Amino acid sequence: MTPSGAPIVFVIDDDAGVRASIQGLLKSVGLRSETFGTALEFLRSKRPDGPSCLVLDVRLPGVNGLDFQRQLADAGTHIPIIFITGHGDIPMTVKAMKSGAVEFLTKPFRDHDLLDAIRQALDRDRALRNQQSHVANLRKCYELLTTREREVMGLVVSGLLNKQIASELGTSEITVKVHRGHVMRKMRAESLAELVRMAAKLELPPRKN
Image (cartoon, rainbow, N blue to C red):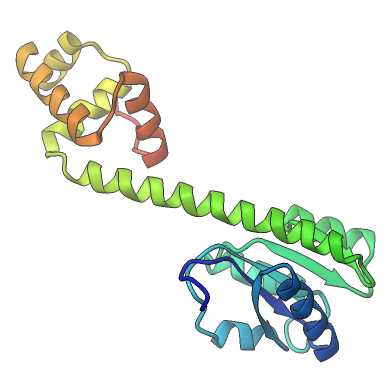
């Protein structure tokens, strides 16, 4: 039984022979996969959670691969894509790569070229998922802050000293130190530099002068 969260490769190609060939290749190296004949079939499927990538034929019935790449991006679905085609050209390749494709392979391609691209794509997706998970955890910590603690955090990461923050907020320096301590503890920040990095990852709005 495949463990939950194990990597999976989605293959969209209208040629059943190509789908079977790629699926057999992936199985031989221990990668699970699901195949689809059209982009619509893929969209209608329930996809398991975990690192994944998409092996996508450029020429498909209905929407073509390049248009589908754009549709996924517009919908906020960020999945690394490896294009395969029997009719590639340089402008097509450039367009795909500029839009974030991992690789653009022309049929017939070598098995190890496809596998290398798939491993790169899965690594990219793992990194993105880890980053998203980290930011989600930071956001949970930030939500624990009171309104005043958020104000103090914003002023701290903008570079103000405790005395300046106290003046800005109309409170005492001791009170600012207390709030600042709460911020560091709740955000689990070990240093000011780490707190600044956290604020950047949270994309907090800049302080208004």
